[in-house]
Length: 148
Image (cartoon, helix red, strand yellow):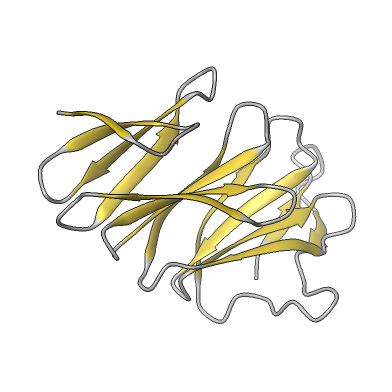
């Protein structure tokens, strides 16, 4: 389970937990990140899912399920409207952060996609893969723009 801590006191404020029938992660949580406004936390697990949690209630708001293998990275876009995830299934995915709807699957890497991140304005995504390439993608269309 993931916990939210108060830095000043060092005390646990809340434990992130299931809500409305959404299960908590079935596997270990590998990473957690805040939305830029601090209202949500994004976790990713070796159960192939990512989840969005409310920092106010500690409850799961959205579950992102669609990868077939282990996740390596998950992060919010700068405007908190989207989330990008990357996986051992050789893909990255862009999701709507509030609804959990899948927007684009970024396909083309030939090995694990180890990281994915948005550009400062959120219009681009860069992925890095164990296939020894990085790819630049349009966040709007999901098309690969360049291979490095």
